[in-house]
Image 1 (cartoon, helix red, strand yellow):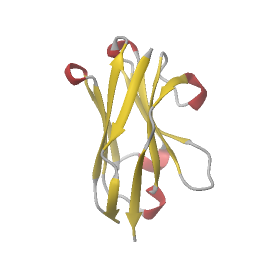
Image 2 (tube, one colour):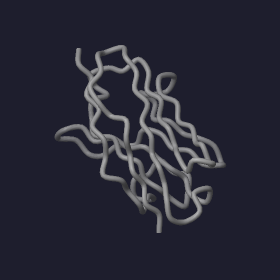
Image 3 (cartoon, rainbow, N blue to C red):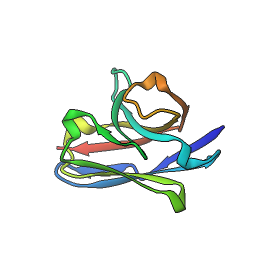
Length: 120
């Protein structure tokens, strides 16, 4: 089993930046893809980005603005978010999967989420 814990959310003005962290513990971190998803009020939880040794994928609206990276020594995955816009406001979740996938259903282990609020 894998446990993941997110941190780094907060309130930021439009155009600003935040870096989210996802710390994983339990089974071998390097065997799992770590993904970021977000859920805005009244909407379904949606894919943002994911990373494993096989590469990284991004949702189209965040390409060029968000960067996902991993530090294996720290069992941590980061999501650097630049040029934030009000539509990025959501609860951001990290999750672990055996496969590099954009599909929410492929992820077995989820964190509690961290709130990101972007003011206009």
